[in-house]
Length: 151
Image 1 (cartoon, rainbow, N blue to C red):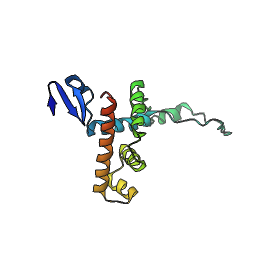
Image 2: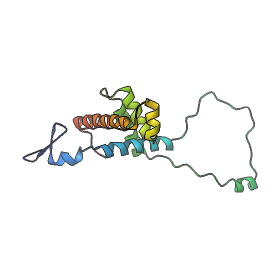
Image 3: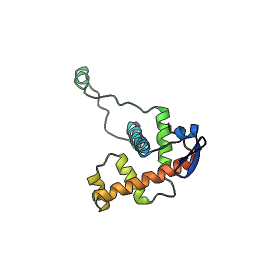
Image 4: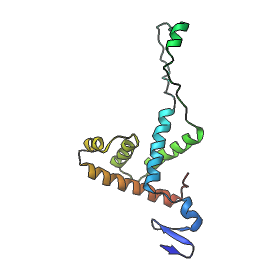
């Protein structure tokens, strides 16, 4: 709906410039959750304090080091990607989402297939897909209401 230079998006009146700036859709939200999971996979593992191994350190010879080149150095996440991931995590903590919807969004973020999600909830795949669409719509409505910019 358009009124003299404004648009109505999810029952909120936005100007022309704000329309593209705050225009969220399901695919953008899904991409943000996918990137959030990817960023947290790139972060280093947590070191438990107080853990100590009494076994001696293994010292590899030069020959063993040459043969051990199969290891791939793990890339680290960029600071702005970490900020976006933390912001994305706050979306899950909204009051209008149920615990089941949060779990469903998180499972899909971890790339669990619809069959696995349906098995987890004990319902059909199509029902899970409808619940997922409703949960994403709730997040989109909240983001539009709070006027969170698309980055």
